[in-house]
Image 1: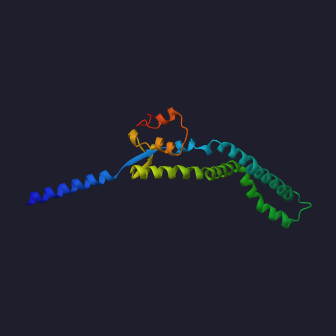
Image 2 (image 1 turned 135 degrees about the horizontal axis):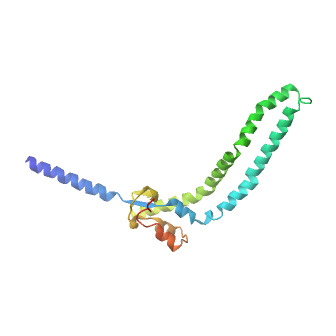
Image 3 (image 1 turned 90 degrees about the vertical axis):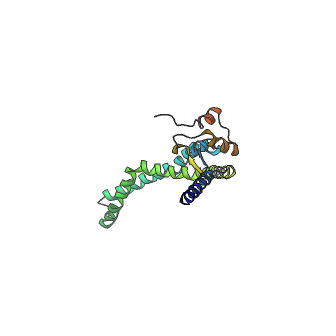
Length: 184
């Protein structure tokens, strides 16, 4: 009787394990690779260069002009009252900090603008991935970079690019489903 109970419990665990594993279906995709073929990304460099020229560079010029003006007020001890010079002395370190760290400030502004411009494109790609995953019964979709070995059949890249009607060169489509990442 104990052997029969143990056998029934073992069979239940085996059946439950098979049901659980049958319900898990994993796919992968390189989202950034899909995004690079999206129509809006081709003009991204041009838009960022325009943003730099129209917004960031004038801000830097304004900052330098402001600093030079404040510095001249501070240095002119004959014409500038002490109270004004003291107030300007408190402001100058902030200008100096911004000028010294301008490259970092500029980079952060460009990254923020890039994220703003890419946001709708990424949303469109993620929506397509979710729709395909739902249609094909995938419970998990991971980035391609998370896997070392993966079956070509679970690569969503061709399905997503087809759904989004993207023109992908054949070598790019083939390179995404290699099954294993190149050795480093």
